[in-house]
Amino acid sequence: MIKKIDKILSLITGAIGYVGYVGIVVIMVFIVADVLARGVMQQGILGAYEIVERLLLVMLFAVFAYTQTHKGHIHVTLFLPKFPRVIRMLLYGTLELLSFITAAFCAYSIVMQGNYSLTADTTTAVLRIPLYPFYYIAAAGMFLFAITLFWDAIKCYIGIKNIDVCNEIQSKWE
Image (cartoon, rainbow, N blue to C red):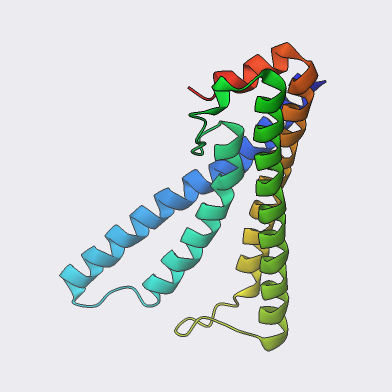
């Protein structure tokens, strides 16, 4: 069951991770095109900063969950291996749970900001691109990140009783 949920989360976050990959490539191409336009035509692409800013927002929030699924975030576990397994998993799981609560609160706050942006009809300054869709995209990425953190916390609590799950979790600490 644990492997199945891990696989499903990995597939979902992997698909969303590709959004991040595409976003960074588009940002690079767009910046190069803007620099070339400034050099050749003495004028950059209108609204280039705004477009790159929006793409960066989407790219950034798209890769949080992917990075968590692949254990790419930094975890300071210097002293955890010195504790007994139960305390190790309890502490690590509690930290994952606190991270989940923080990420869920951030996602909720981003949705609230998106709602405000929608009702206030806020747009970018030059191209007048509505801002609210980007807040909702960021919130979706943050909610997915929160889900992966919650699942990791659950696995830690399972690792209290299951040595195999504990060993799998600890193998990512090195």
